[in-house]
Length: 425
Image (cartoon, rainbow, N blue to C red; front, side, top):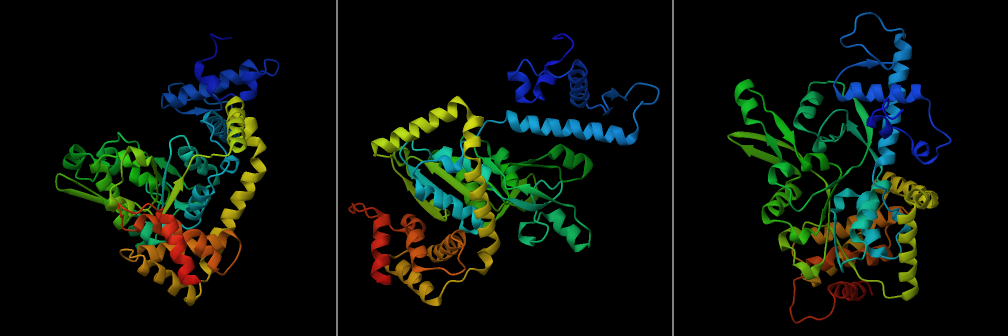
């Protein structure tokens, strides 16, 4: 049987077939699966497990049965690929770190907040928490087949080609896709991040042959940079340009190509390993500080939960399935009511007064605080912002925008909180 079956057939088997020797599929099923995978890997067309390319004669299956067979195989492959992906720690299972979790949730509810910068001690779960956000990301409408995840309704999030099709009155195919999260490695090249232009094809065929990069993939999604304070300067410049304009422009040999690059920028790092450039730091909407848990019982709980996850990830994730679904519903509901949330003029004035008295440069702090307060009210299921909402989010929105005083020993977040209560009385 081992010689009959290819190694590719094992890849599409459900995990129960690999763990339970008593419930094995038939040889016919395995052979059919292996044949379909082999044909797809060679770029040949299969119908119902029979290779059509290069064989004379007609298939014994009808068109309807062929479509059903191929669809079932594709579904099996999709299910198998999901099972084979590296399991992600559930967001709702993370103990403590409430400030970091809240900042991440608010940015998912309102991406225009501008992202989160997470700084803290090593080993405090920064990367784990960010990557656990994947399961909670909602679905969005995108133009089918578009490499930039173009929004079929908002011109700001449309690629140039999609916008031209809209102006011509074409009917765009629309699908629902989950918001994606893209990791930006520290060692990535500029071409991999921005995209590349095939100069040879452009010169010989006269077309703009563009290979999209990570910024294109991250459009309308999340771009995560771990150890962001160690990022090379040339990549920092690229992020600054895209974060400021919302567009990525690639210039090569007299050829210019632009595409939308609006993403939620999330960075994490350890302040002991180096400071972040102030220009990039200002581009983050919110700033979360993460500290090491000091409570002994809480530390034990974190260790035990992590051990359970490492021992059996699937069982651990299933135990938090209900809480994850509840959180997903809460996020979707908050996104739907966000546009109707109101904030009183009095609160707006007081927010701006806090920013002015703290000598915050620019108006980005005012804008982000208003947006974050609205997102928090929506998360709580309310249609009006309260002073308590502002008190919760304003330290995260302003602490990284204050001018640094080397002689100041008090935490900048506490300075913001003190000024808030002084103004709000």
